[in-house]
Image (tube, rainbow, N blue to C red; front, side, top):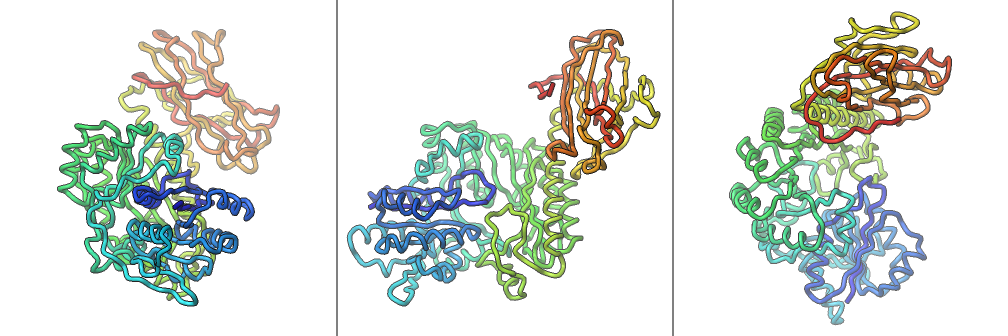
Length: 602
């Protein structure tokens, strides 16, 4: 029999991705002799088109899967398909269906909900449908029959995860997904989480499975490595991404992984960790095995929010030590953050901002809190009347679905955007530090300003100023156009000119039209200067021209010896220079190894 999976992913701001749950279900169904197919929807098709596509496949079962964010689309899809295919059962699964089965079955076109692990139940259901047998009593399924719902019990958890076949990736055309994500293979080590965070679906799932077996389970290291080898034969991969909530839970498992993985593979990999489960020794072992990045849950910089509202039992000192230990081991860091939790204040959001600014991770993930069914915070929001209706399509939408007195919706949006901009600041600061690492600073042109020749109509058209754009602060050399500054420099070894350009944020909306042209010239003397850089910014007309823009130029042809380096700013439109303040940031002459050319716009 053919089973059609439908997975909507509309408006989530995520690239097409692999969904492990569908992959495992497809694998066990294929092993049982069934056929599977997937509609991965990034936009909702017209009803006639969807019906025609389903009719071509002629499935015996339609399986809808999606998150809480995507459930409204699942209901719409079922509403289209049920009248067209009244004899084909429609089943809904995934974490939303599991934790909100009553709400899911409130959509009358959905016939069945899977409320537990799906591998065993889906195979039993497909077999029963193919053989024309009764399926009303299958465990883990709630089934609509006549005018009532048959709520079957939850069966025991699958203890032996090695007994599940490797997830079916072909159903997703997996190489295409790999190619858009730097060929990074997504993997799961196990199932479950021991923590009881008030916002996380794990607490609801753990309660659902109470008395049904061990909730936290792991595949064997050999089984995991076998899947990596299997995928390496099928696909072109460059690195690995272990997507478990926490990779570092089982010390014995990790010890075996540390021993076996580097003997078989050399792929760099990424993991999620809890700050309370790692120490410097583990980070050193992770780095030795090829770990290139760790994602750590900060969530909130406020102890009151993190402990009292979110029920995250981790201290700020543990978080800071974990980031520090990772970086000392040479591992990049990524912080998870939320804003807009019920009871959160502007002071709490500021604490999250300040903590992340102190940590300065290589990447920050920032999301607005959404209350999910089956969690304590969902019940709290529902009980206090904070749920004002409406949904958002994904985790990274900056709109909140809550209204509560301590932080207004517009303030939540403000803090979300402020944290997103901080992410850019941290990333740029880390990139600059990495770029200059191991390279010697020869001249800082801001420090050399006193000895330079300046050509401006007004003396205060130039000078040093610290500039802040989108939360990022830099030391800047202001050069209000028209302005030209010449430096007489002497090099004893090949060097490069590393710098940024910017237009002052104070004139973004009121600056003169046309913008500013930035030029760099060099030569042995003032009579033979040649243009080596030219770029135009027009921050008033183009938002993409707002910010700092970094470049690097090779000056090796001028060494050894003395030469002139000239910086100039000029109005792009003649006479339009009254409100176009601009300049250079961190203008440094450096020497040392350099891997690739920076892009220079001529």
